[in-house]
Length: 418
Image (tube, rainbow, N blue to C red):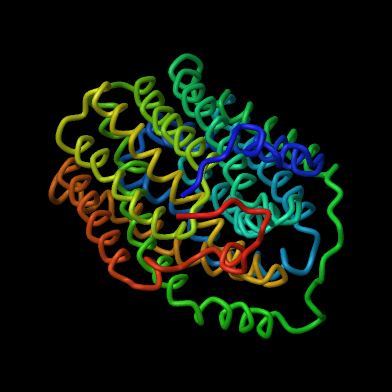
């Protein structure tokens, strides 16, 4: 691994299209950070149980999983930034509706569930388009630094959103958090609509099934790719059950809502630290580095289940954030440097599909399992799932040995390696 100077690390910012992408994504990332915290406490304030909260969260995740493959096809056919604009407009509309219902006292849990179905459907088109857009805004030589900067701005937005949402919900209630959320989605849509992306080769007119088959061939032919996706189906389900669904329940009983927002913000601080490390590094085997650091998430889940105190949870969340961010940058670089650009969004869609597949299952099972064995033992069990799944991934040779294609070809513009 080599280190780079700040001037080298920040070179992607010299491209105006990339700067505009960062600004637009920062706005909608801030909205995404606020939404789950506001939603969780909105359901609890309406008298919802952990099982009902899990079902409402699943109502967002299920349509995302069902539609995301079609989102990948659309993002390879249409300008990706315009797909993002449309998804943000839908997000603004749904959040504004929730805000009105909560602030007028007309909200019921089933209404929030229905609205989350629409929101989750929009996300199915947003994720593949966003994932495939970064390589269109910078030269390949700056790809790792560009991804690190995208992730850094994402996490900066998450810190502000998570901490702000916790304080806002505690002080004014979830309704106002949703109102601010709607405005942020609109700002993101306005900024992203100004992007001017050079035309790249698009899919020839063919059936959706043919396009999906081509994406599947690209996906299934790479062992490192499908193994990581399968493993992270379990990792993401465990995280959704322990942190997203049961975390607010434990927080209400112990550290409080504002403190829970601070813990989530600590995760984002750690992710910023991980992003800075990635910004100044060049990994020849990014997937191996990233997968190994996912193990840093395990202490957070164990402490949440065993000893939920603010300071220890915040410290563990910080460490977990470093690991999760390192993996996120490493994964994007591995994908973007090894997958053909004209199929990238479809392959990302299969990635998102597999990774998200078990999230609603984790959210739905969190309530019944915690009712049977207890909330905290369920969280500890989820931490053990992450541990076992990550160690299994590290046993796969192609994950340990995968190298960046641009470095393997001797790209002189990218700093060399370990």
